[in-house]
Length: 181
Image 1 (spheres, one colour):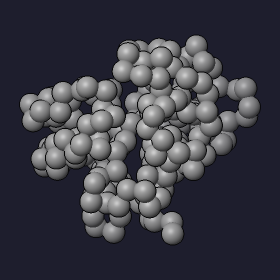
Image 2 (image 1 turned 135 degrees about the vertical axis):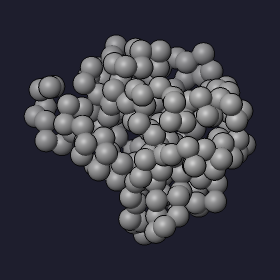
Image 3 (image 1 turned 60 degrees about the vertical axis):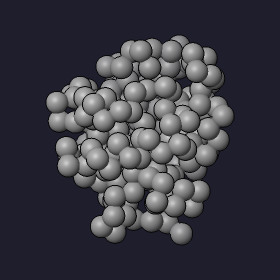
Image 4 (image 1 turned 180 degrees about the vertical axis):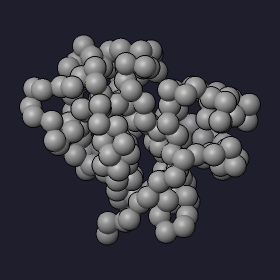
């Protein structure tokens, strides 16, 4: 059953909930060894964090159901540099996301959240982004399957220090093939 997902910007008031979600064992397993202590969450996701990243809270009904971010891929060279060698456009956005433990993982929420976010935020608010990409770990099958269900295609495998990642991309529908802005 499709779900209506809307988004609002993450605020400092959301950091306690985000800290809990990031420390959920099912999330920690895929978070690439990132520091998810309280201080690190405040530094990385709080209002004083890196302005390159837009942090959003997906909402179903009135309930927060996760976290999702977007950024210009060229502004995150540590993560996205290898993407360009596999054909991802330099005008692409990157996304990262998580579905909250209590939101009902495995029930289609992840793909619904990704579809709505790409349409409403990534492409809807950023006309300069011609493509969107994400690189979940290859072993994180639910994550890359959610991307597939959201219309992303497999681009290639990236060898990350923590294991191989499955790079997935989706083109802006209103950009002709082979024409990047």
